[in-house]
Amino acid sequence: MTHSFETLTVDLGKRSYPIHIGGNLLADTKNLLRSHIGDGRIAIITDETVAGLHLQSLLKNLGGGNIKTIIVQPGEGTKSFAVLQDVLDTLLKANFSRDDTLIAFGGGVIGDLTGFVASILKRGCQFIQIPTTLLAQVDSSVGGKTAINTSAGKNLVGSFYQPKCVLIDTDILSTLDPRQMRAGYAEVLKYALINDPEFFDWLEVNANDLLSQDQTALRKAILTACTAKADIVRRDERERGERALLNLGHSFAHALEAKAGYDGTLLHGEAVSAGMLMAFEYAQDLGHCSGQDAQRLRQHLQATGMPTMNDLSASITDDPDALFAFMGRDKKNTRTDMTLILTHGIGGAFIEPCANQTSVLEYLQKACSIRLRAS
Ligand code: GLY
Image 1 (cartoon, rainbow, N blue to C red):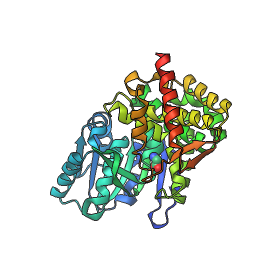
Image 2: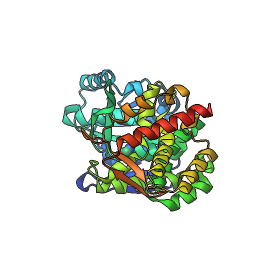
Image 3: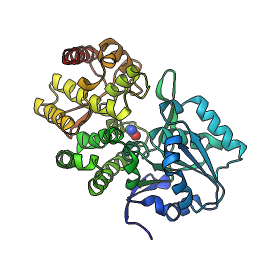
Image 4: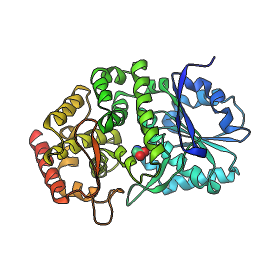
């Protein structure tokens, strides 16, 4: 039996690919992926958590056969040169070739690592994304950004390399805990804040249903987010311009994550939640955004249990100079200028290529001292 699903296309000419979105789609993996895999071999790259929960089901639904599985440790530490080398060695020893297919089966870490492996294995083999977290379903599995981290920072070594297909099974999210759901929700909310105020209205009413895994709400939100992302990627695949809008709040978020030390105490989506409100507050200080919109966002975050800076541990928020220094290392910056994504209000994000760095530091000093007083 084939389950009902919807298909979007990321329209990139010869490199276009479908995103299939629906419930229980894992059961239809063989049919949906057949045309992409052909007669080639398959290697599934996944982590221990996802393997324990879902790998047998994926293997069964692919119809068995000689499928290689590579299981890595969960967590950001896996996006490293060491793991990259291990995975490449394993695939090369098994003589994987350009006609073979890698399947990224996991969250953003697995998608980013597998995509990067695919982009360099024998100068490029094909890969498919089967994202298993909300965050990966609405953001990282679509658009072809791949990367590992280095000691100099997050995602600093990588490539733009598009998958052949993205298969989003919304039922697979049932094994995610509420914290992971909220972390993914930050990236859903991001699309509303960038340019879709009607979607924000809808989220104000439906976000808690979505977070409790109401399948109708979840599918509508994932479809809206993936449509928005596919549109932006089609127009600006390599982030020469508007794709940078997808980083709303991320310069602040990356600084919070770097200060937290990538040890799992602060999830990326949690940092994005706090970071988006910081972008709104900073834009309000500059007179770009009304206080009502910043307040509306703050209320929405509170109503959905999403973290703001005041909810983060004091050790992350006690040093504005350190946060400012991390912001100075962001990939979007040029040698001299700091690029920030700011906002005119809900649905009105814009790129500020030359942020006034004194005012950024002043904002961080103010936000950190408010956080200190709140504790
Ligand atoms: N996650 C932001 C982007 O894909 O551009």
